[in-house]
Length: 121
Image 1 (cartoon, rainbow, N blue to C red):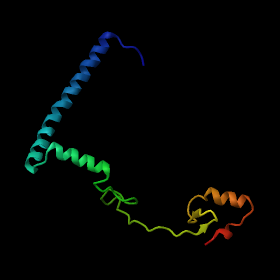
Image 2 (image 1 turned 90 degrees about the horizontal axis):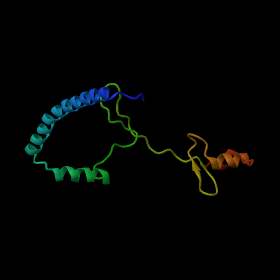
Image 3 (image 1 turned 180 degrees about the vertical axis):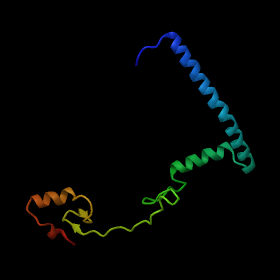
């Protein structure tokens, strides 16, 4: 980063302070709206803290895997699909559905000369 002269630094600081002041003035009305809404609904700060703690602990359900939060014409919520049946199993209890990348245990067994069909269930 190039070195700035003291005058340029002061000008930059002044500009940033003005930007900060503008942001703060926009924030004040929003805070008042939130306070009024909380008062109207009877919500307290401790309610918010409890809600945050509950969501971190899993008290508030999160969206299911395989669904989307967006609701609109561009992206519709997909139905959750069921589990896929296991198609391959070895003597050690390792399993594979036959989908996705071939697991290491099966690759190693095939390298050792075993046939994939011998692991079919």
